[in-house]
Length: 373
Image (cartoon, rainbow, N blue to C red; front, side, top):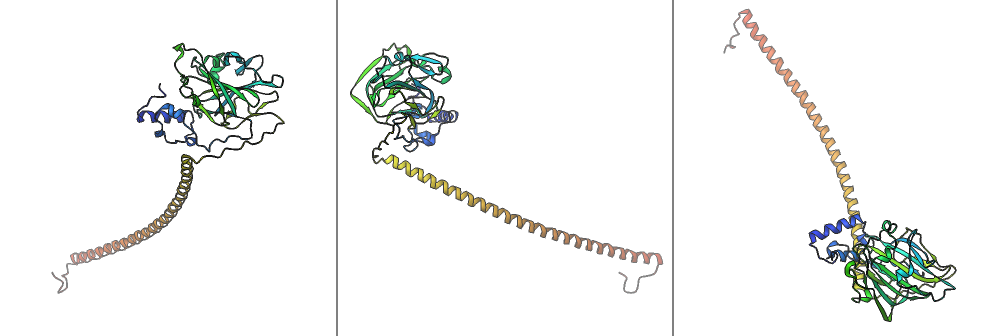
């Protein structure tokens, strides 16, 4: 409800600014870099990335479907998997049934748990080319799936609301589950549209909803599947040859499109990229990026020129100031000397005049004729 509610811009923007700062969100990767482009918190959480910031590994049979961090991975042994190290839950309880492998002699069931933090890109994509024939919506709680919580709450991934998509890929069984978390019961699956309603709350007493997909939904590698609000978890369970190896380690930070795993000794031909349709928005983003680079270069060059001019002006000013100060000091010095000479002459004149007057008084002589006033 809060994520879908439109807030006044003076309220929404400070919230988003704080969110970006606190969770280290890189808005430079988003299609819409300006906060003014987002009407609600939900719009911001499910922001799309520019087409150029994540590349899909076309040589890998299985790619990472989202940004985030690896909580755990491995083989499903004895019908259980680990949500984090040392905390296990039954596969059947999580999936609603025990998966049937197409070739149990040659293959095993593998899994990986991927955590999307609040600051991560919140949309998730298809990790491979596969077909979906069933979707099950499991209502449940909305507890935090933060790794620290997963370590102390057993079976949290089986308790939380989730949407399971199951089907098959080149090696057999394949399932893809989007698990809800705190404030993240709203799970969007693009191809289902309004067929399921999530985030109704724990007390809605809603039963599990199972949907058969006819015809099967074909998903392409890297194709967008859906999105969360405020981070959550993706769980992949799939059949693969017993020698299958993952390309990452627990707690590793991951990015959409990187290779998830491989079968040693098997060469995978690079999947041909589909020719991209002319996309005006994509062209506009490329032009804008090029303009930004050009503007940044001009600003940088202008700044360097301004700095050079400032330095030269400062040097010239210092030279002029020093010359002026020297001239001023010389004038002051000459003025002081002239003043001293004038003062000395005045004092000498006054002494001579006084001496003459004293002589007249002392001798009693009359002043010379023509001198009387």
